Length: 292
Length: 347
Image (cartoon, rainbow over all chains, first blue to last red; front, side, top):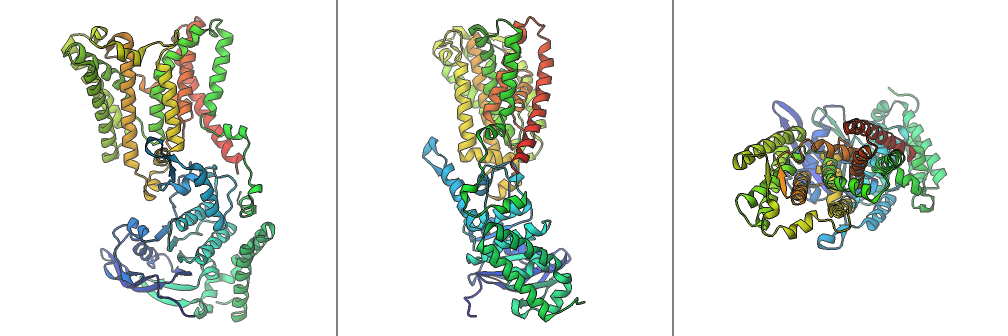
């Protein structure tokens, strides 16, 4: 497969906090239209890496390139202005405010001029509905407070919002942690949607069950160093299977996705479910039985 | 609720459940106060025979209007997550300051009004600046401002006039025109402050629900961290609302002074809690992020009805405070219940 150069690239980046070396000469490249998964245990350097990518920390050593050009971000807002959006676990959502108000918070569309400048509520609601629909999220009531929505739905809104504001790189920090299987499946679906819309998605997770079905590219960190950098087809499956513990979670996920797909006759959902099913079968063929 | 959420087809808007008009009303923050207003109105109509007269209505609306102007401002500030306990003291201070500048210093009446307004804006900025810079709770900061403003007010007024009341404002040149604007009775017994109250409530509602600034008010109180991370100027929003509260105190200070032709240092003292109570009766959350201007205005109306109703029922005025406390508590409980039901009903 011939591809354009990476959208985002880090080369030999290191970050030290006092005497602790959090990241030690890590290199990685992230391409548009791909989901790159950063895997690793706690303390492996995952969050330091994404904080560098998101502009929270500047690396002590190494270079950060965007579109092939070296860049240095002083704040997350700098990174955001260049199209690098990060969806953190604690999101940026105000629970008591409605869905559409949250969607446009800080970037509210207005109409009229001078003292009569006001929110363009009709267009804001329409845009919010359309943008969320593009990501495969159906909202029943846009006036519903965000607090009444599930964790998965909140994640989904945050992703849809980042995509709408022109993000080219979407960094997701443990988006499926603390979610049930079904909700996690839904969030994974939005990740696939974002990828299909041409974003470079960087997914940080410690759950390979969630990374494997959606990922195209896997970076495994261990103690601040790169322990592996694989395309999906090169992934050492025995290793992954060991951590996947039989993939029972995955089957439940597929079942849920298929059931939802049937009920809603949502083609994309069905496709995703089938893709995951194929992946599981592929895994079974290569590594039958219970490994490890 | 996830199952149901997912069952919706993308783009199938005909299946989108739109809550009915009743549920829409039920889930509004001011719903509880509207119910309360109807109950209080019905109760005193039944208890006090003269409650349903034009005179009683004027007597209800008069105190409700000035309280309402303050309650609406305090509600907006509370929605943004802050308190202003100095608001009551500011009503008294702006009044005496204006009266002393005109009566004792002989200033032009308009100049005195402008300078007093500038003073109010300055105090608002001071409150906002200290709260934002120190991150101290605004409850404490403005409690300090309350006593500073009140203390300075009593001290200066006594030093200048030897009394705690400044009279003779009605003899100052040019009194009539501003008196018309702030304290006339253009419709029979009904005061012009009622028009101000309605106008301000309408404007505040529009700002809250239909402008970017309104969105920022809710966000600043709802989750300041989240609001900042999406670019909402939280500090500026709060500072502007502190100034708005002080400016409202100036407006009510002018209304009182022009109505009486004099200003007493004790005016507005202790009323800061009435403003907060009216806002809470109106559905504003003490913790911020939720509330309504209409609710605060209705909360003030309930105050006025109870006060007048007690008089017309020939009860001792002392009972007012019992009513007040009971109303606050039931409003808080009702609001909590309504929010809970609203949340579950929409799942």
